[in-house]
Image (cartoon, rainbow, N blue to C red):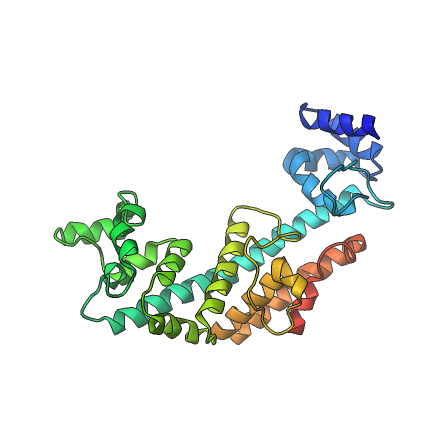
Length: 305
């Protein structure tokens, strides 16, 4: 055992050829039916990246310490590839709906608060509307020289050289999702926050804020190619939608329940479509690699809430 552990650690620090990688995988109990195809995939995806999708079929899964990287009986190279493409397809599905939520949140904030504070088109830096420290630091942290290089913002200042900031409907449109969420959190009036959260059917601002952070965390995971099948939320769900179990408050299933709920307040049809697409991806994976059904979260369960 000690020899195997040393060998594993040593391999992690030494570059290896595709042929050596295939031999190592087979020595650990992984079945490879088509070595030619395996070489092509390893050249395309990479040995290290594919290892994340082999993790569930390791004997020590989900333990991350003292791993031998030995695989369970009947585990195949194709299984890891199928899980990789499931994750890839899930990412593509989610990005479409996450973008819809982001745009709706941004638009609700712009439209409702810009109309509430009609006489002040730059209410987002007004100390009467947002916390004073946020207003003071906005130019340094958000409205930077790089931000002002955006063609729309640049054109606004070219036409209006005396304006320190472009109006909310221009400025907020080009802020990142995280920056818009930060702005929401920095609103001074609880009425302003409740105005926005109520549009998503949520009375408690703290719950709504938590849900939006969940959406942002999954959106960032998708944007940066992180694992989704084994995704753990950096910030737990405060109070999940109906059907959420305690265990799901920290994992991808709980996050999907939140996304489904938020999406449903925007469009019930789109929420149903999202669930159907996710279930289709999951069933495709389980049909081609049934070994994963008891090993990874049940993505079809989100239809029950």
